[in-house]
Image 1 (cartoon, helix red, strand yellow):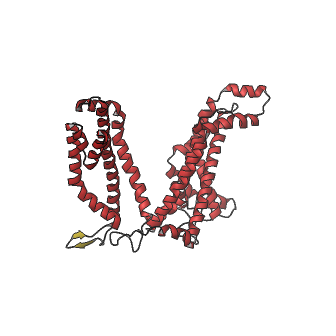
Image 2: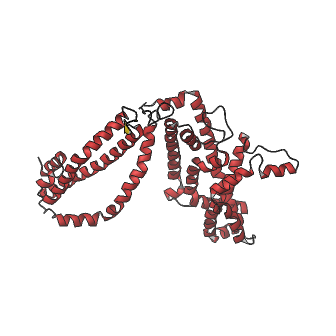
Image 3: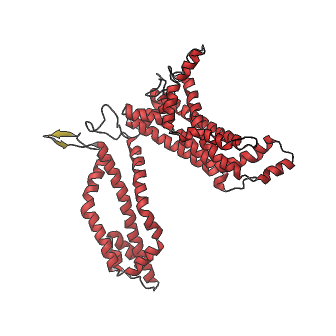
Length: 430
């Protein structure tokens, strides 16, 4: 057996043995102490946490003589997920221990001298300095990002919901794919999901397109040669974006309400009150118009900078060739703007797909739809999830829908972004 293989096997059996075999005493002691600490202090915690992750508890939480006894399924689930993440981190360190022993043994096989512990520290510091600096951030982001995602995925395979499976009074059980089957097979759930998903896609597409081209129109107007007081117009158009969005939405909700100012003006003009927010179709139109008013300034500012950076030579060459204003727009301006803003367009679609504020603050998902399960006519998937969790405690179904949203948005955004010319770094003009 080669020396490198023997060193790797020894470090696999117990951390540090391979280093001792390579006569790296200090390094071997460090790895050995690390494994001893893991075995003594963390194994009992991991054992309890993994038991909780598998069973989700055996006895509901209750009080005996003022002392809490029993299990809380959700706490056990979170502890189990944290344990899995920690075990993954420990496995990485364990692999580093094996790799280090093997690499040192290979040096000795080639007749080279091993590094002293001081030389090893200097080598690692010089080569992996950026990684050392990034490691705390990477670990923090990993836990902060992965923990909620894994938790949501796990909840989708449980019956975590009211009234019979809501901790601490009750335990939660693993149910496999039952929730996914219910979303497809139970008519009330499937019809609600399909209806809300259809409106969500329509909303995301229209909201993105209208704000994008609305911003482009404002940018073209404020950059046109014949327009005076351009700075004043830009300042006026940017006001909706400068005011906090939630405040603007609440004001708009008041203005479009039944007894609101807009209907009062219509009544004084002899026109009947219009059910802006209580008619399903009108409510959707109002949402799109308000979103256009709020979102266009962002794209206006973005595109104004792009328009000023387009080379004048392109337009002069087009004038020499006798191109019309329309031809210059479609052949020069629009392609250049699309090339520069394609990633922002995709991000805007992903944002609008989950644009909770505009829906909830303006219509609260209403008007009510009796054919839907806990959803209204203007609810999008994310606002429906909010109602399922905060209002109805149907956490299991909300988790299922969250997973579906994640895959839809991630797939569409990734595919669209990869296909953009900006990503491929292709020539702007073919």
